[in-house]
Length: 498
Image (cartoon, rainbow, N blue to C red):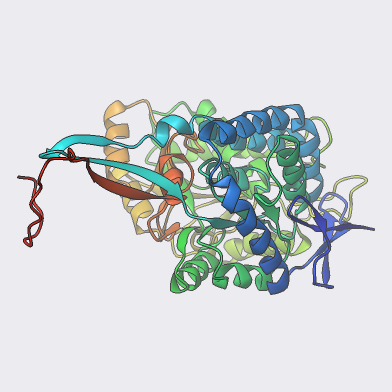
């Protein structure tokens, strides 16, 4: 049985911990490896290695850092298929979907390759007689990322390339459910020429997380996960003097107006709801059907859901793989039953699905629920599975009110042919990322990713310009170079620009 170890200071390390946890293949239900569960001693070892590496890496030139990023980008391209299969085997998503997440992560690497422009400071000449002012940004030191199971490559890639390219050193604590992608990426960084200790991986659960949140040698923590844990991470890390990015949960709504092209709309909502078995923080989990759109939309969504091909992620033609664990499968199927008991119409029931040759896999089929109200558990809870709930409203304004009353504000979409409706929608919804006829509005790497309300704890979105600011801090320098014979009187009053 393979044991997945930490990556510290450029090599694999068993570490001080003796506990391990199984890593399953979700398509078969079989244990395929074990991962070590690190604790405070392992985190400290990584911090010490990263701290030593920071002394030289932070002094490296921007050209040297971007050259590593260019090489790393090339390696991500060359090994995309291999990394995609590693992700599929541990997460369950299709290989094509895994390759898609690698692509979206690689976009941040490409942004990091161009940080020379983003990091440029400013200069003000002659702010006072013979006095100039300029500013520049410097790295923080050792920083860390705590990332979720649903995107074992993409979400970490939204963090560490920017952190490293700006001169920091990085410790990644990936999900213990699918840990192998992190170690594979560490190997790619080494091949790209990144010095040992700049990128480290510590595996584990809550003990490792708590050690990261409280270690005095870590300056900042980036987190993506559920809202309760995001609040815990933010409160704990900030109380220990750290900067924190903490992205929480979501309940993403797609509003459909009567003028929308229903075939186009249903295709995209179906993909947004059931892609990656709904295990995406940007998944479409609620379709808000407005007015006369409702009956026709549900009919088309039913037809599309029944055509979704469910199977192992490495099988050609598969649209949707299994859920990540048996517990996730059971939780999602229980939620479907609860929705029916609470009065929802189960239009498509994905429970009890068995795949030939993979009878012990963690599969459930797409489920479509109609006549869902905002009081039902299927609406209020973040199910994180292939369940699409249809809520009906009479007007667009009512649909906006439904979205704004929800505690989450991660992503939303509107399907319409009306520019006026689209403009009204995007101005009124209290949501951080909005798609117009785009179901999963994940911004490009040169914009920042982050929701509103309970989807973002604190005020620091991830990647893009906000990520660059998060991993650096400014210095402002006021300069005077008097001539040798020049006499400058020093005043005791507060300095002004006269």
